[in-house]
Amino acid sequence: MIEIPEGPFEIAEACAGLRFLIASSVFGCFFAVVMYRSFLRRILFIIMSVLVPIFANGLRALGIIVLAHLEGSAAAVETDHILYGWVFFTLVMMILIAIGMAFAEKPRWHLPVGSTTIDKTSVWRFAVAGAVAKWVGI
Image (cartoon, rainbow, N blue to C red; front, top):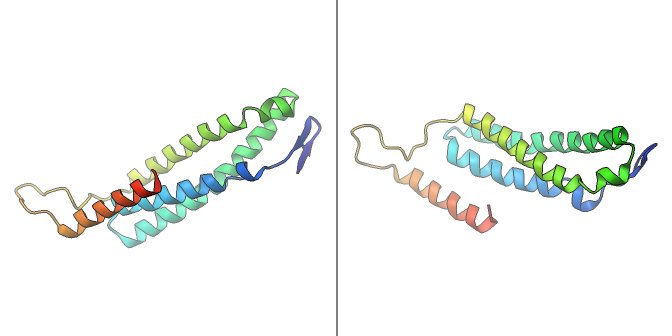
């Protein structure tokens, strides 16, 4: 329970950021498998896809409380916190994608100029990653 002069804030279980963290970590694993060949880059991006949402969710909660303080009504801001959460989640995912693309390696399934063969391992990984994404519901 967080109390400010404008009213109390209770962090509900549905808004605690666990779904945000799960979605981000699943996306991070998928993105890392598809975009990186290096094991170290994959691990670093997966770690980043867990840490960034935790930090971002704290900023989101702080922003909602500050906004309630500035508007003078906790109840008015609480009604929009779901919308704020979706917008914030979208922005954080876009930031993660931008950071990930900055360090992306050339995917293996692209054929080099003049080549007529495809690396079977990379095609298999891509197929498995697509099946997992479909199963998870991404």
